[in-house]
Length: 337
Image (cartoon, rainbow, N blue to C red; front, side, top):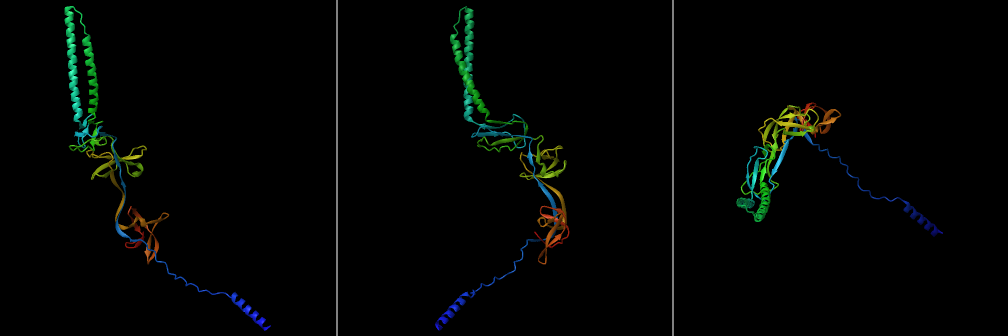
């Protein structure tokens, strides 16, 4: 009986131990560190000059232009007869090629033409003389032989003339002529021994009447009719005075007319006009990108004791790079970009 009681107590103890909670080792708590301070991109307010401007780049366009090329390539250039800036007339010879073989063929055909023409003329003279002699003698004349010889000679002469016309047409391809009256620009720089190409430019002929620089209206809509500007000719390293011409009704373009007509400009030349809307000097200024807007109120972020704070400001001239600060900021204060 005692054994049974002991066994029961032992089993009850084991069961109770199994039901007790088990304690596990917990990992250490992570170390909490404060976040690093924000690395603001700062710049000081300075004293300087502020210019509000826009760059306008019109392109020169002739009212009419014609590109002159040689129609045959691979031949030696004989000569170029004009210079840049020269006024030329329609039909004027601008350049020529050299083709000795073609010229030799033409010379030979001219000799053959002369020989056949002479034979035909002599035949006609003999025939006419025979007719006169027969008429004087009152005898009939058999001119069958004359007619046959004349037909042969005439056929040969016709064939030679056709060949001559073909060769002279080929000869015309050795010359370049001005297609209209105008100014010659981009004239080919000729050097001895150069060969022609059909893509090579002999010259560009421009009609300078009504030739202007032009730009899309919306890019220069702020410019007024009659305003004069100094314009740099890009790639030419020189300045020219131009006057604004705005069509009275509609139109998509604003034109800039060269005041100095002696300046030679090639079609496609770019101009560069710097149009100044406003400028101030020796003022408090910050980079334009540092100025922000809250509705219609401009403000900047200013660093004060390591804290970024909003500062309302009054701005003046605002340029591409810098903006004038009329009030609200002192020189040396650090603003956030």
